[in-house]
Image (cartoon, rainbow, N blue to C red; front, side, top):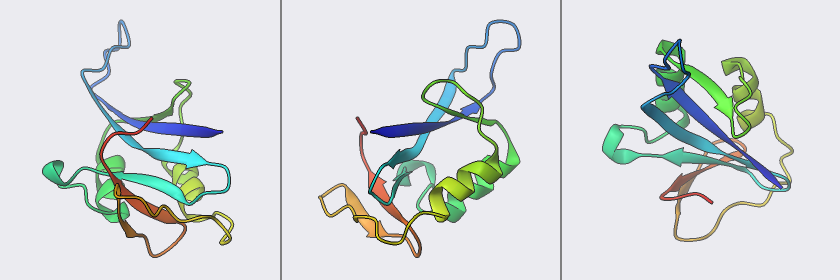
Length: 107
């Protein structure tokens, strides 16, 4: 079981549509947080994400529930250290904590 998280930018106040949204990553039971890196957009690390998330937009989970930046940071960084690491080709590096850097599409 897992939950995906998204960065929403420029959300319409009237209809709620957002032409700009990015997948931040996925929290799955028993695994390190799968932090989505998007090199072509300059997102290569947790620090890159934190700069963008702090500057503008909002964060929601896959159920469209709002998530505070503080809660997302906790979800990413305050996980049990006995988590499995991602070892497939999409994992480009292991973060310095309980997250892995994942490139490509998520399911």
